[in-house]
Length: 67
Image 1 (cartoon, one colour):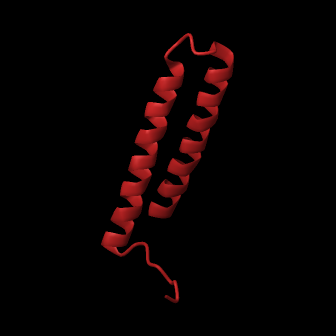
Image 2 (image 1 turned 45 degrees about the vertical axis):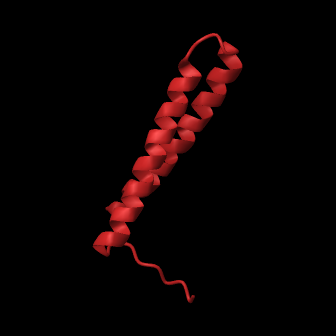
């Protein structure tokens, strides 16, 4: 369940990235939709980071790295 939430958050971040690009090209800086898309993207990235941290803290995510 946690892994699916992390993947969903990453996909939502990518969608927000491309919506910001679309607004940047379409509006040419005349509206604040680009700034709103940036705010949404930063919030989604912070929530994704918090989910990953929670996953490691709770033991639901583990690292199998050899180092």
